[in-house]
Image 1 (cartoon, rainbow, N blue to C red):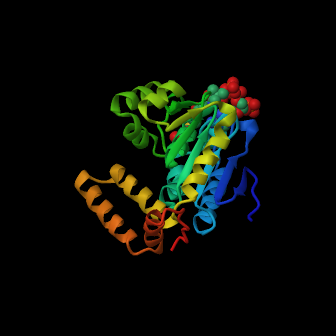
Image 2: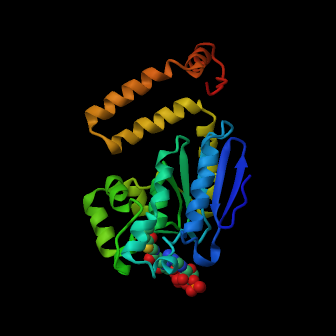
Image 3: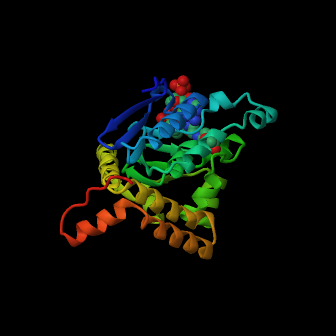
Length: 258
Ligand code: CAA
């Protein structure tokens, strides 16, 4: 396994776990951390032994945003020429389902990283926000788009224009997070959900994830058409044969991810 400086990478059965590990900077997302997270996801994504990934932080902070100290001296030419933040886009192309386990601050890039994941499980101390406006900039890792799709225009405008922080009860009410659990249980709860996902057919979960994502990326007609094609494609898999046979024979399925 690759050596890491800013994250801890572990596995638990068929679940890959990435823990952001820059505690002194509240897990601020610098370039090194971005490259390590993206690299770890890439490695898990091609590993047939991994069926779901959890990205988590510390109890105080999932991540307090992009690293302001790293960013502060950059010019327009620097960010354009470096395609600053561009590597994060790779996470949205992973086929393996990714769960964000969020406790504490998920601000700016931290909120955007959580939203880049497929679903968010939150601790009861989680706080979400896009405070970039306070720094004279705007979200840059998809926050203006994913937050708007997640919570609607009025709330997204409120968050992005004022920079206010949203507590977890409001985030759950709006559908930004899927489940809220006591903060000390958040990591374990996310791993438990990941284990459930990882117990399914990998091919089916990748197709399911792809289908749901079409709802964000295309029109209803195109999304339904894509879903139908993906549904049909599952009938080319051994796992469809096995899953349906297991139901008929009243036993648990033994998926082989083929
Ligand atoms: N970048 C770099 N360092 C950060 C950081 C960040 N985003 N957030 C916190 N830190 C550092 C602090 O500088 C501090 O370091 P020092 O001890 O060396 O001074 C350490 O983490 C602890 O932070 P605080 O002392 O501020 O802790 P706190 O409990 O008083 O406050 C907080 C916590 C409210 C989250 C506060 O740290 C804060 O407001 N952080 C910045 C949040 C922010 O603006 N995020 C958006 C960044 S821009 C962005 O993300 C752009 C994008 O779209 C991708």
